[in-house]
Image (tube, rainbow, N blue to C red):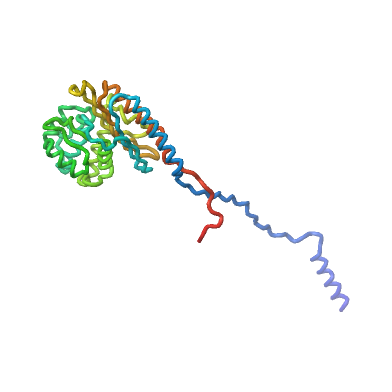
Length: 305
């Protein structure tokens, strides 16, 4: 009996120790994980200061080589970059640039309620720079006295309406043109009475000026940028038969929202003023991104908790 038990046990052990191995369960092995390099972005203030100094120097050199008086102001709402020379000189005649003021003042006075005839006049005044339309709306807004009230309310401290019915004799500064644009974009300050629809109407018309009047600060635009502007030009027979030529507007696109005003006077002709304005606008538009450069650095290896 003992012999059979041992034999049976031996057979059982032999069966368990055969040549074949028991299957091994696979072990999951994770692929190496790629760890992204940590980088921090910083505004390079030193490089920005150098780029700004070079641009202002180049603009000043360019303006010295042009006839007459040239002043400008610029503000990029995205980066906060400001530029300017003579931007607070407030004896610059704006000519047809005052037509935007007339429409904004009328909308504020009427709480945005313009009739069909007034809307037609507004479109002709801005898009075509129609002087007869401006005459009619200047009268309806209340003339120079009402415009003075408008300028005080909206915070344009460097703008004076033209005398009597002469709206084209309005004097202003590049800084005030930029304040006006900010008011139309953001409804800030005294422009809070202008609804978004009112502001959209004005900027929309400025974005649709007829092609032969789309010169000026539009030279700062890159392909695909949106431009809303108003230009002014007028002969000045009592100032040595010279011209005043001005342009201001908004140039918006990826990474920028540039407000720009360039004003000239004592120009030998309209074309000379246009060339000067576009020369300055082109320099600013081409080099604006370089005024807010960014540098990258590795993240700290042992950050403080």
